[in-house]
Length: 127
Image (cartoon, rainbow, N blue to C red):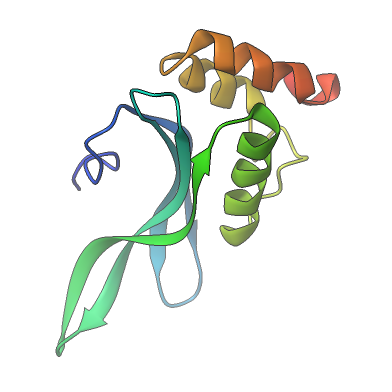
């Protein structure tokens, strides 16, 4: 599989990476944040799936949700929650979705912004 951040020319961070399946398929899923040079963020929910296309199975990365033009930490949190919901991730379960990893990986893009986001996260989800 290709790098899940290869779709963008901007610096990107993987905020969530997981695997899921049903009786017919299995897939990898990601929540990815990007940051422009001017500090505008986008958050994407992506799935690496095997799909039946033109009479054969093809593997590809599919965007299932995206929120662009993010300038504030509260909108960023809302975008992450929207993407998690689209991927059916239980964000209040620290075993399923770890905000500590989200903040750590977000800090690779911008430490100050990561700290701002952290200030709005329920402290019980940061243990």
